[in-house]
Length: 511
Figure 1: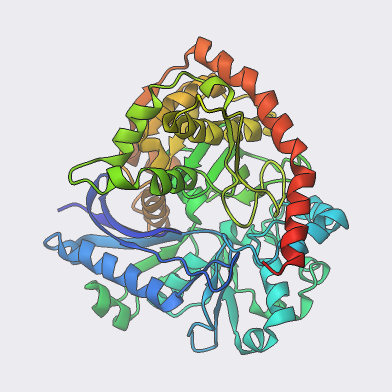
Figure 2: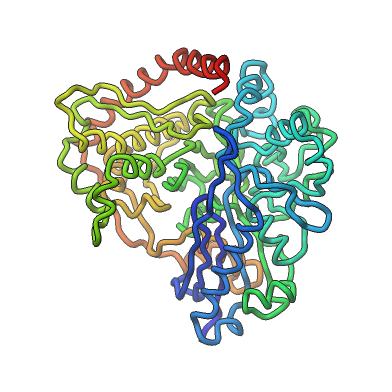
């Protein structure tokens, strides 16, 4: 058997461990649901102990399913959901639940940061605008509401950092996750003035050491090795976080490469070789795994989650029938409706934390518009697909960079309908690469580069990433989508004061 790599991906909804061979082929894998907890409306947390247990179980299951795998695994790569706040004490034990990137408790702080100019100051130094996902504002909220919890904490980690700690005993993060809020991507170093500017200067001690993605490695602890069925001392490499990891796993690393990761969120991005500050005060500028690459991204809070919500609410009977593939059924029904849905629009702001790209509005909410009694359930369904597309088109127009071609990744890339919609709406070829687990593959690629299995990221991608299918744009359909984009924007902008009034009403009624 040739060398193997184990990729562990701590996704928001699903935790996966996948075994890859040196050619990037998926050899074995296992998955567990990652349960979201809602202690109060708008809060979204996860049990850190349960997350570690699921990661360990899936890794052990993947390893044991392949005879001799433990002796052939040359490195373990770890990635996971970005941002959020995963607090641990000095012994490495969780201090409460993790506050995830989906959490909306800091909505008022975000609104004040944007109206008061703080977000503009932060963006000028980091290329990243403040939003409800940011660990910095979550720490500030905890300092105001749960100071004892922060006092007991030794480190503020993120998802992959927590699993790295469980596997190696080391408190650390990599440059890609560090790019969330505190980091100067120009110098690839912590900006020492930012914590004070953000009102958390006294909690700077919680920020872990920052390493390059290939340098963020340590040997597997004996106890963890026993639990996973691996050799003690196996190299563990943590990074990059899931967006950049999925980029690597999709072959997206050259300047100008564009990629949308259509998962729980919808991440619209382009690789760059220098910092870019447009559009102002929105989106993120992140470190990619390669030391000379950055990623400028406008991430929508929700992507495929909109479809999952709609199917759960309006296709429950069909989903309960034995043998029914609810996603195939949904595509068949949506395809019966012509592009544009006869003017029915859906704005995909389904997350209680609002929206963060291409505008930051914690009070944003999803809505259908343009409906009459003549519209069917299928029309609303197709409008959900199209609403996610319009959000992507909106973000890419704000990026104001030519898109030669787009790579589509994440669970949504399994949808032929969505892939074709993206090709039509963006008027460019859309490619989906082989395999289903680009995030885990990207973590494995990074680990392989770190331990010398591959000479470079370019060599690793040449060895591991292959195109599976490509969609050519249909100009006539694309023209329909582009004609509707101004109406899509006009509608959501008209609702800004309505969203604000609704949020105020909820505050006054303690909802």
